Image (cartoon, rainbow, N blue to C red; front, side, top):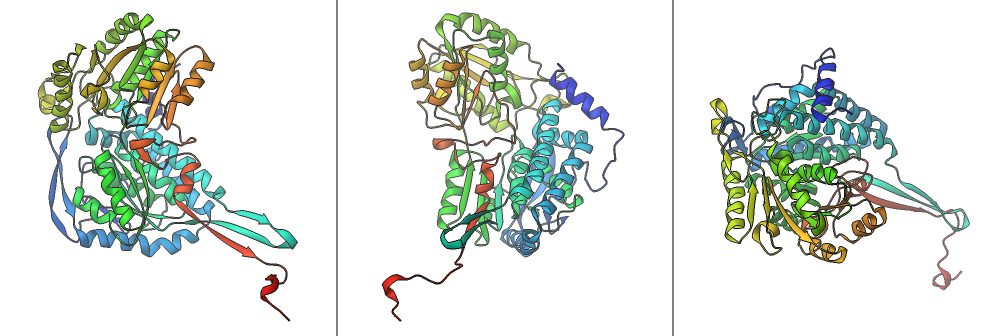
Length: 517
């Protein structure tokens, strides 16, 4: 079986002979808004944002902040084309989404490099992320013709039709850890259902949402169906509060999610929130240690630990605790911190200095509360052009207690807190003792116990004997403070449509004694 890096390297080399599309900007170049089918400067702006390239700590680009007039312009563009887009058949819309998927695959390497500049994650991870975008567009392109209603036969030959209707203009606000993926997870199903879209990327990662807009245009999606506006919180608030936006879809922190949900409530809008997590990873005494270690690496250190579903509370059965810790620390210390564009780098740069310092503050807090940092938890200074980036060594923390700050709060960095347990009941109770409920995992060779514990964990996604694998075919979303609604799978269609019921009477009206001849 090929390693991920080998697989995507071979995939990329196999694409070199394919058609290179000319409609995609392959350099870090503005304008950064995309409205009515083209890149454009905002028609009004309240200033600009200096975006830092994580790998080098230097300014990547300067992006104008969209004001209210530009938000209105983008929403008007989406609203104006909505009647045309919704009237296309599902097959016609689907064909355009599948064409966009092909364009991404044909340009995988160039788009992946843009994502690395934007995020600081290793190039092989970026390839995985961008490939998942192609997968999502392909999946919903294929599903679009099957987004249909229902025919219900009734008494006396009468019948009802239940129609699935698009909502209108969707307002989306995305996250910085998976910039293009979090965008596509919203846009692909929304467009498949016949909606149009206005999207605001995170102010830290503005690049690839505009790339997606170019790809959709080249695939034949009409101008105005997908629009991108740039800005910070104020721009996002303007979009969320716009009266012509029918639904909001947000990925990010719980505090910002509360603001988005408040705006939705005030405007009586539908809302989907994919928020934070503090997920449990439970490793029983009969688990395969090697697989458990590999999954714990995936659950804590991919994308520099900046993953909402990460299993950062690692519960290990006391009988195997020492063996697991020995293997886990050894594997963690082998991870290579370095240039995100180097094929052998496994740990790239943290998104920016402030966030890196926040992650390090959790390490300090853990020590102050009595935990032991077995490895990592420090800034690693690289040489040359990388000297300005914030590279943090992945940390393994033991002697943890459930009430420690590092165990209770979402760190959003490469910090794994390892805890011991003795019984299944104890593990489940402690796993559920959190305000979050995004994900979780169970490692055991006993499939009955695995299934039993998976059903007992209060979270939207549970893995048994693996971690952090996502597929478009199944829904993703959280319980409790981890969110509202679902992305992916067939389930997301219900979050981007509304139903209309039409009742057809085939006989005379029967109103009983209300009508007398």
